[in-house]
Length: 442
Ligand SMILES: [Mn+2]
Image (cartoon, rainbow, N blue to C red; front, side, top):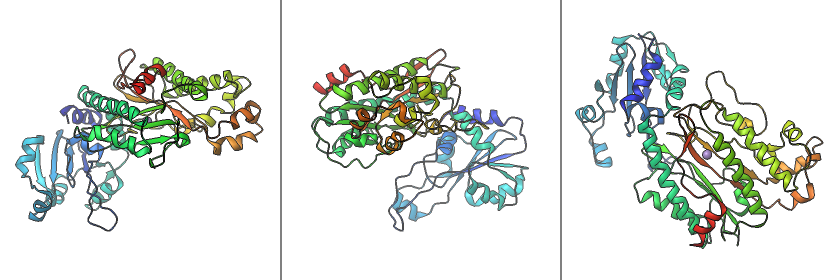
């Protein structure tokens, strides 16, 4: 964690002199009513501001003198027996350089002595704790300030994200090759994760999707345990986490490496949507405009292939794109996979099918990291009602689309950093059919 993260936060709060910021960090969680501990991952805002990757800490930021104070949990010898360490306050002072450290049983005294007119909190439970000490709280300003800070990455953060993307890119290529001979989806997952764990990347930024055949149309398929049909397509949506920072990459490919027939046609269409929206990504561009552009590419392509008829503008009017592309084009990426900062205060999601799930409605700025992930899915639950919808049915070539009901889906996803005039693509996994054919044919 860098000094600059805290400096950025202090900058946002500058005019506020008398207040404090109080945050509690993550706690250990257990499997239901057992003593089995889930592996600990620090809460992202806490990690961003402190760099502490241990449970049960708290932190205070004093806006009056721009100092920060680390609040340690009091640990006994039992903790040392089970966890193997109890670090001294001096250790934390030396390692993290806060202005002071003290144990959590002193918090009450600090609140009483300091008597801030306002305490900014990250969560309601933190606010409840502070209110219990008779102080005023605000739970809106701090999360907004953190989202604002976190949405523009520092050079140091970008370095970590390059590492996370590089590792996941390598794992994708390994998994692509493995899918050729695997019988079960989880065999591909195992090889993907093996590559990351081997490098000490023990946390995953999210549950990876390893979907074969028609499972590839299930947007959050995490079952990953079905048999891979012969000659099926395979969708991998999985990333790596490096020092808290995520990558989030998707590739879809035929396990036999042959981009022919319907799959090849539809794949090229999604690739075109990705290439066109990516090449438009630069400061000043709105995410929702990129999303709508991808929708048009997909509709035009489906029309050229004979699956749709009519005018593209009329199709856009009735939100026909959402039948085939029901999720957002992309989201912010950082300490969390769906990172904070996608919506500024007062900006609401667009209430329109497909766009409703767009997780970022920002004008792009230098230093933002986003995903671009157009997709094309054949989802019977959406198409069946559309076939009898008087507004949408006239555009659909029903008999031709019915032949595709078991097709599944295609998604291609890259991670971009917005630069001064364009973008840097962090993802390094082939996506052109001939490049993937070459890898799988190796
Ligand atoms: Mn994503």
